[in-house]
Amino acid sequence: MRAVVTRVKEASVTIGGAVSGQISGGFLVLLGIGPQDTADTAVKLADKICNLRVFEDENGKMNLSLEQVGGSLLVVSQFTLYADTSSRRPGFTGAAKPDVAIPLYEAFMAHCRERGFAVEHGQFGAEMQVSSVNDGPVTILFDTERP
Image (tube, rainbow, N blue to C red; front, side, top):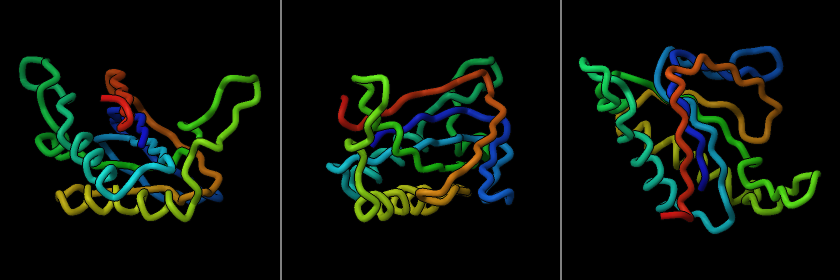
């Protein structure tokens, strides 16, 4: 799995002119799923992201977690994180097919909810418009294939 996680003051996803998900503060998570990913991968990545300490404490240091600041997550499926950019026209055959990806996308969000977080989301495979007000900015890349 690959994720681009941005600390945001607010974020939303709109589908067909209607807001599908919206948060007032926390993480915007663009989530890509590969064919080798499993439910275990989804849980491990969810735990890593939920435990990430990138919010400022009283001394201005990035030391607080999502839980400590009462943040939420907005999760948006993003197969383009598996783009093959070896040519000018990217290929996306490295991304998992929907029959694999959708259950893992759902498992990732379910685990975040089980941990007590509010999770908003887009719609897998939909044409979406994503808006965010980045905080910092702080953006972290995750790739479960790399240590």
